[in-house]
Length: 534
Image (cartoon, rainbow, N blue to C red; front, top):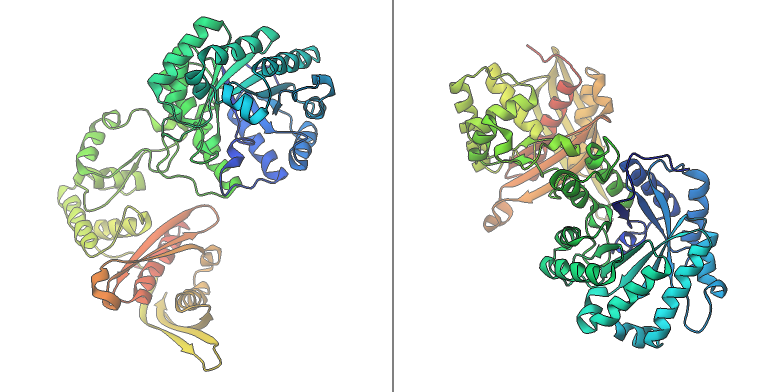
């Protein structure tokens, strides 16, 4: 049961991730996936969640049956999607209309043709019969106690071709009792000024309550959605992270953030906007797509600052280079350290990492020069915060942070005549006054080195048992030198509670990997609160 919300019915946030968003190439949702996403969307506080087309496929039919039993919606109403009745029949006899009722959804969205050519060529019926299909289906579902929204498919293209007929579809749906008539830019080809002009005209000429559904083929779906709101639309249809057919739909998160923070509209329950970044990333995990780092508001880089000029201004006032406080949407400001960094960047990054620089200008200057020198050699600290923190702490303390001293290491790759391979590594090191020699095999030379280092150190530092390498990237930096090129390795490591990245650079890919591994284990011990050797 949906609990009473402090929001009224004057403005709708309608999510269609589970239907339209699922049409994105590469997304294949199971029923369990759809249930998980529905819970996240309800937690976010959207008003309506379109779950799919019951009766069209077994998966969507099962989703509605399970959603009724398994989800206690707190904020959202579940919406079933379907079509107006078929030509030449009645709504009460149309099987797909009956399936909409059998879904148990309190709200139904009907797709209707509003482009005259689509009526004649796709539906193969007359313009008058299409209006009757809209009228009959809306009236029947309203009589059954359902709330009805109408999606006018290809509305803007249809309006351009035959504005009077397009408006007749809107008028017919509204007069039959549709709660909202949604104008759809199905091909995604419209621009904001065009959207605003058409919506304003249709609103004035029909008096219907209007909504907007925008595809992103011109890269304007969010802008088009907001333009429709400017013109009087009070219902916005979006998908999480902009998922959808072709290049996608209007992205739910920047639309909602703009409405709340730029327009001053209360469209989410109190406190839910701060959950936006978490919800965005959680849904990305369910659909098994990497979250976009550069997505507005919720991306990892949305409030990341790299240039020294920006950092100097942010040190005085963060609002000088940020359009909102990132905490409002559950995100955080990040300072990136690179060869573009100045003193302010280092000072702010030190503060972010909890490393006290004490206003020491000489120390900060040394760090700036060290970073620039290392980045010239191929290191990248904006992608390897852990390696930068180790560098910073080494400059502050006047010596590197050490938990172990490496005497030597070697990796052997054996290619046998039968086509099999063997990879073995040996490390010799000192830790807490003890000399350790460890050998291990792996499925590659780097994996063998990782295992041998772990075997050798876990006896001294059992905290390392939690560590797991979760990503490994290699980039050739100077391709013109061929096999003699410098190589950069980035390694991401997790202890189950968080992840960090480290970097190594060398002409030898295994040597670069070893540097990144050393930093990864050193930082892992630092995170675990282990005191370094004196």
